[in-house]
Image (tube, rainbow, N blue to C red; front, side, top):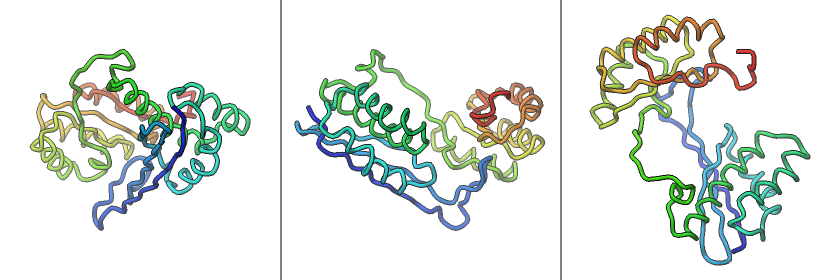
Length: 233
């Protein structure tokens, strides 16, 4: 089963006026994604999603003009072989560029989709896993920096909608971050999981001072306190 065509569809949605969410990496004014479609000569089609890196058109162009020609005609079930070819011709020889890494992620996901369809199995079974329920949490581009009372009100709205877990954005400043977490915990009670994400905006001292308060509020995790390049922290 050969790869015949790869299509990357860049999508961008600008948030309505007044719906901007501020977090550690700045204000979110739009939401982007790239849907990647891989077609085969046997009629199976796989879909994946590539992270846009704030430039969905650029990553989609890289898929169309650089990655797709490299792997067209390859075995669609040879996920490792496809990755190895892109790694040899694009990543290792031209640097581990973020755009290429984002591009191959969507293709890789689509190829696993094809493998699951070819085997007649959902992906979790193909990978040797078992079926289990997993909680969904609210907080994709919401629950950002805002007055604590307003944040608690928003959080209660998600609980009423059926969510059992929330992710709050930290990385504003230590005092306001802790106050927001404590206010939301008081509003939603102990039965709701609270998770946090600092979006790389903490220094080591910030984390040391905030983590005890997060533990006291029974927070499940502190995600991404530092940049991935900040090895010392």
